Image (cartoon, rainbow, N blue to C red; front, side, top):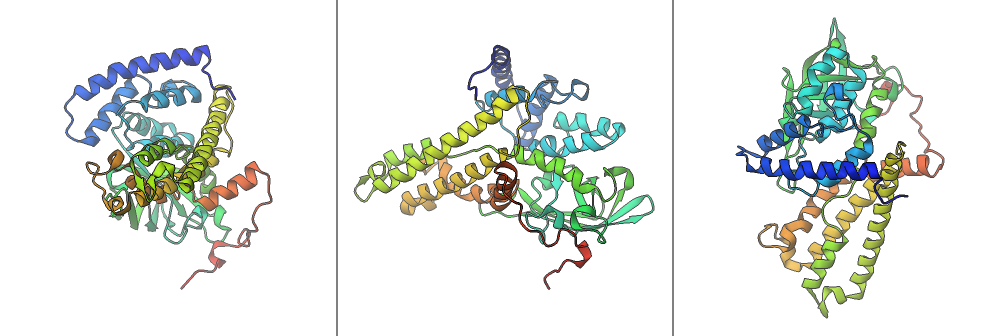
Amino acid sequence: MDFNDTPEEAGYRAAARAWLEKNVAEHKALPHVDDMAAARSWQARKAGAGYAQITWPKEWGGGGGTPIHSVIFGQEEAKFPVQYGYFTIGLGMCVPTVMAFADDTTKRRFVGPALRGEEIWSQLFSEPAGGSDVAAIRTRAVRDGDDWLVNGQKVWTSGAHYSDYGIVLVRTNTDVPKHKGLTMFWLDLRSPGVEIRPIHQMSGGSNFNEVYFTDVRIPDAQRLGAVDAGWKVALVTLMNERLAVGGGTGAGPKEILALAKELDAADGPLIRDAAFRQRLADWYVQAEGLRNTRMRTITALSRGQTPGPESSIGKIIAANQLQELGNAAVEAEDQYGIINDPALVPLKGLFQTAVMNAPGLRIAGGTDEILKNIIAERVLGLPGEIRVDKDAAFKDLPVGR
């Protein structure tokens, strides 16, 4: 691994930092109606400078840069208070799928507005009966002339309540194995028959949604890829999703160390407790392993290589550690741990937020079990799990009553 920038990368980092220092100051000085308006304004500003999607070709509004350039800009941008997540799914997962499979007319219509933050996209894959098995979806699309009629339900659709468009994976053939009877479409989420219901989360937010389809008419011209070949299209989206949620966020060992110095345990400050110190050492070892794994990925990008399935390691370790840290800190705060007011609890409620958000992060982008299988089979080379449904027609698979 190489932990240092090349001369070219160092120059790019300096230019990105200079641009951010100037433009963040200008952005913050503008009057914005709300957080969404501020996000759109910042996204448009980045797009105008070629920083919105650095690896996209310049002819599509991107920066024409390399993946390592994107990593560098992301590292520098993270140092400023301008992080908006409204566009992550669209630009990181949905629009790249549209760019890979749609015709030029469709791409010209949607790529620019998404890049500038004018339109937001959602990914409609998960279903109540499918869990992490994307290929088990039951939302049906039936051909009706030049259109398809879609009926079914999606769940855990992030950002659907403020999105304009989405990509949806549906079943178009039940006479073949489950991976072979899927088709992908893009659709307007304001289409007749689409009902979006936000899900109230224990954190108090409503970032996820249920989406119901009742005789929703989608033109065949909005199909992405061939009929019944949607699994290949979905893999493009899913690989981008793995990378998008692979990093860690929120509370870490340094933060809980600071808390432990302030909290009292039974025999003095928590930091003197032997059992806690052992757990803290384990978290630091995990964090260093995670940091080095990320550096391995960044080194591969710097050398022009493509990171492999080992990116799954980062997500599974980071999400689990965040949950452990949050639970440990809230327990250590004793009765005050239940207080979730940032003005009253240590570190502005960082650990309370971790407790609320970590379970969702362990599901997003693939559950722990899915990622462990990926690591076992594709990184360690272990035999794949036995799949008794591999060659069975979808219509013949047993279902619960």
